[in-house]
Length: 465
Image 1: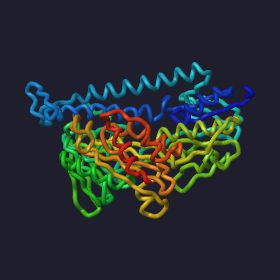
Image 2 (image 1 turned 60 degrees about the horizontal axis):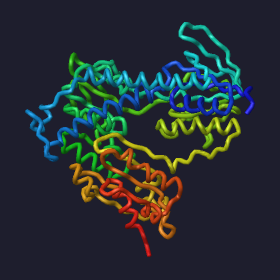
Image 3 (image 1 turned 30 degrees about the vertical axis):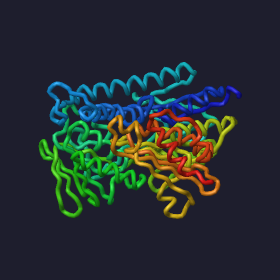
Image 4 (image 1 turned 90 degrees about the horizontal axis):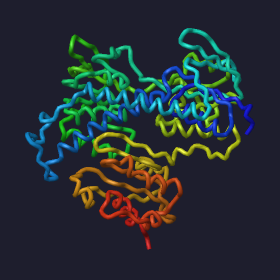
């Protein structure tokens, strides 16, 4: 590949740094312009920090279940009050791990010959980027191709403005030094559900305000029902079909007012109201890059925008707000531009996970699509409670669900609800990606006893003579 190919990337998150590594591998001259820190929000303020916090919460949950497994800790009765959390120490660890991960990525980029410019980039047409450094100096970068991977930011409302102390976005929670006495989480999507679940496990009194009739309205309905039932059983207050009108602070308390006039008071509030793309003031118009009404950049399945030579990847496209999808979009863009073998992005093969307790992992087609007649599929669902390893580990909640095409028997999707579902979904993801039949999936050996044995058992139940 000619070394003269100049690639300029705006943003150092997964869509940016993964595309940079691919382009460098293929011999391009690569420059990343980044203003927020290598790794982006995924590493510094979102995925890595939140999952590190959740790891502590998971351990708290495991310890509370110790008595069932025959363990007796001196002075511990299994009650929430018996365990204490040093949130300042937890959050210090969160920030430290995020910084380490960012540093690891930066060193990899440097090792592979990628130039990183600290500053904010904007397009000047479709073949030039102007990088403005923090001190205001500008640098003009000529480009054969440009990739925009500027991510997204937490959405806020005029009636619910975060102050970074009591009213918080999900990026601001890591500055807390003490556990909230009473936490209100507004928004029951993935982010809201994860934080509500984590803080509940840490011993916090949590109220979840959901504008929909169930938690996680975008996920599998059976999975959402399990999560909601478990959360309520553990003490969470779930206000369904309750839309937030405003959030105000008065000293050390916050009040969430609902549209029906009800009020909920707590010590802290986390706003999980979705995301807005970081696409303003990027010079998109000068290059002819089209966005939708929400400001998200329109792309095709190989990450091309409406402008020749300009690609986009990640949350700024609004395709699927997952770090894995952002990274794949970025890789595909570079493979496509630099002439390597490439397959268009296939959202039907994307695996995702909600890091609640229990976790919810999905891949491929959904129950909703089956019920709507969008795809014809047979379904098998097995509770984990019948799995021998689950019994040994004291796991009572969760299930595995498989979808396969009748006749052909090809596995087209699945759901796993339970501890470490994010790990258990991988074999199902391979099955969907490689169009394996339920018989092929079932005939692969599993360890006995193991939670993955339930996946094989579900596949065996889809066998037809």
